[in-house]
Length: 487
Image 1 (tube, helix red, strand yellow):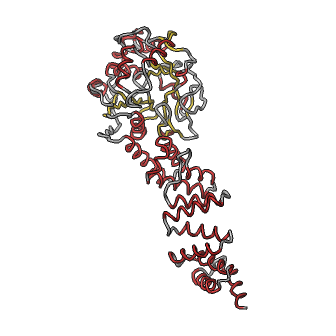
Image 2 (cartoon, one colour):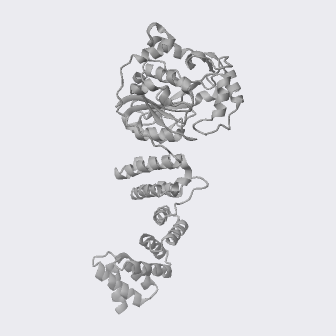
Image 3 (tube, one colour):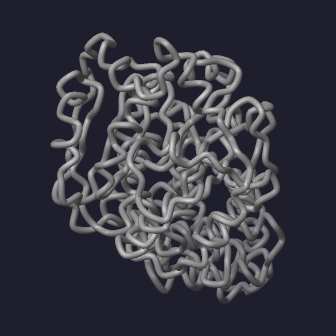
């Protein structure tokens, strides 16, 4: 098992691939899982040496809007093979400031699900045309600390505490193992108060003006074609980058013999060969990324149900809803897991959570079109005192399954308790027609018939209870009524 891997999805960035792998190898990254998003020159051709050494695993992953899916794939298939996996881009470089080895830095954060590292946005540093050489050497002007994008983070996660990507910046984690910043403070979301004294993420957002124009034409792996960005972004970011930042160059100088910045590749080339124990999962071709992701989520949910892990089940439901919204409720595997969790909530008397899970949240939220869901909703609303909602929910459930004995029983008892005896009798009759051995239905039918002085129905139902359940708790009361009717 590796201690530290990095995950990357990339397209037509061959010029910068080697320097990105070399630099992060220098600071302690052991393996790279690279998703090739349809590069004209294959990543396999560019990183031949590193692939042969077991340092890089390449997965062909063409298609638009693939970044979230690649992260989900990496977490699902490779998470069990590494204690830490960082999810960053080709123009992002992790720079620890308190140590020269990123693995040593991470040891202090092993109690947490992830560490969130803040961006340091770099500008073009005066480059109009694409310069030769590595990014970290060419672009050395950073933006001010309070520049808004510097509040964004990227994550290095511990897969064993991580459920699913919330986005490309941030992941869902187990509550007892939250994501923290460098100061061990739990954070929520990817836009948080900036802290970059111990570690930073150099983000070479602009590069040169020439390269940024190419970037706009190429699109990216999140949105496909970039429509929300134009050259105004370049000018805004570049003009804000006016402070020289040489942290990464100083770090490299400590790690390369003689402090030679250009000696990174030759240095890491001397490192030992890494034998790969990772299974290379190549789901090719993927025609529909959304479907592929839902397949991953469904497998995770099935595992949670098999292990009877209600916390994991709940987190997968949250993650799936966050990723796909209320549309996820169209999938039967999701409904199955949701109903399992709701049943647990009801058994634990957590009715408020059960109602939230059933009804969903947001303006388009709705109860899944499933009779069992409406049965659980009826139970939940009854315990919360919403009598009007109980009836509506149970009637909706019956419209989906007229023979659902659980709904029929709950609604008939509900009517009985409201002294709506004719309606209760009608439903009790339906139950006994479906299941003639249902002693409870016969008992309440007998009581309801007594209230309406329907003695033939009362007597018949009473005798059924005597035969089916001689120890039924309502039988003593029914005997008294039967005796009273005789006298």
